[in-house]
Length: 315
Image 1 (tube, rainbow, N blue to C red):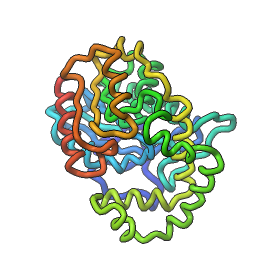
Image 2 (cartoon, rainbow, N blue to C red; image 1 turned 90 degrees about the vertical axis):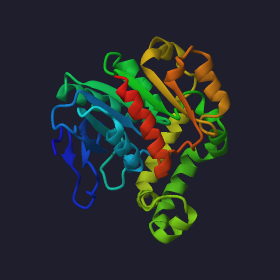
Image 3 (cartoon, helix red, strand yellow; image 1 turned 180 degrees about the vertical axis):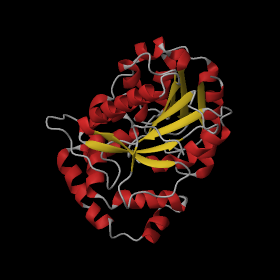
């Protein structure tokens, strides 16, 4: 399997069998390594299109294996490659120490995504790069567009949190969790989470496939990872405020939006702001009846993958 020079093998014990190259992306300037998944082109040639995927929170990219595999299988282009890039600190077992003076984990995730985007362009200078993002990953994608206005040929935003996330139903319900003391307490509970049997997690999440339960199992058993996810969430609450309509209006021809009908992170009022402030072409917006975390169930991943593959084929 052809692997880009910016990826490195995972440490022993972390490498698992996946339908792609399971790796890490070193970020020495940010004191950490991000988990990465790489699907090469089917033609074994250099990619003409690189799909750069940015997850939501928690940023464990293994939650999206079914979705990304579906996109690759359904896309017509044989010269499509896919890079999924996790958030720093969100993968149990990978090193991450926030640099001194860091204000939020969220700003670090933006910096790491921009570094990964630059690496893609350096490795494949003739390829188009399409950002596909989920939830708060879409805010990161918007920041990438702001910092690298010529670096993205298209942006596909899946159930995107782009407007006053703290004022959504879930934001109001969970805001207590994002302050310093509750974050520390909940993260320490990860030591107890490590003792939870997998069978119990399956009982608590009966509709989840076994693969997704195993990803959750590793998350709830890692205090450091729980703390990193909650610290990133605190930054989201602080920074995701007013919808950047000027940025989106200037780039609306290259942006595709995927919404869930009933979504407590992107409620109807938020969706109304995003769709109401800009005159979007009808074919650029897709609204479906599935949850905000659509990547968990295989059926939802398949439907989402079909939509994204169709948008990629338009290129």
